[in-house]
Amino acid sequence: MLNVALTGNAAAGKSTVARWFQEWGATLIDADELVREVERPGSPTLGEIARQFGPQVLLPDGSLDRPRLRAIVLEDPARREALNAIVHPAVQARRDQLVRAARTRGDAIVVNDIPLLFEVLDPGAFDLVVLVDAPEAVRRARLRERGLEPAEIDRLLAAQLPPGAKRGRSHIVLENRGTLDQLKRAAWDAWQTMKKRAGRR
Image (cartoon, rainbow, N blue to C red; front, side, top):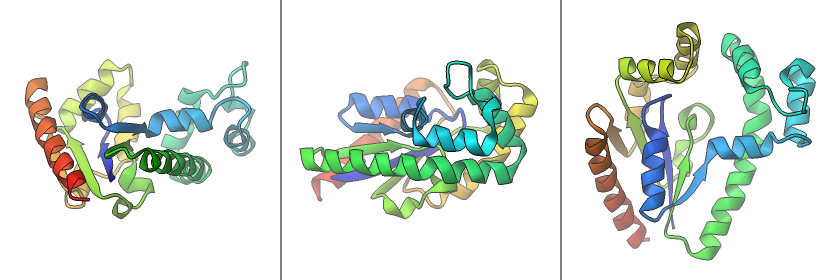
């Protein structure tokens, strides 16, 4: 089984590529979905978040107020690290379970969609690292379209390693600088490489 990490900075197009890989036959493990799973109301993870960050990060129904928590941690690197120390071990444990299950089933390729791969994990733990990158101006425009304010965008991008620091540690870099069709062709070429690698294992 080929265990792939797919990453990219905010609004680079990573989620689009992840969907294509899934359509073409990969088993997709989405880190954002795992975060929502481990932070569900009543979970130990959410309880620890509320203990450390206060009840103001909870909505009346007991679920997490994500915009409020994001605003807190983007302002303060120490609090961001504290949040990561709570959430990421739980997410990693769940990811490990899903990867083991995929291996047991005999799945050929598992794609782990991990936005903060280089920031919080060891990329060397994966057989292949695929980075999706787009120019910063394009990513900023997409984030504005998603409703983020310029100051929020600045903080979000500052919290991530710059793409240049990730390129040298990635096996495949998909450039999202043109049309969607161009990105899809590049992703298809990457998929063929992944299939060849999986076939040799």
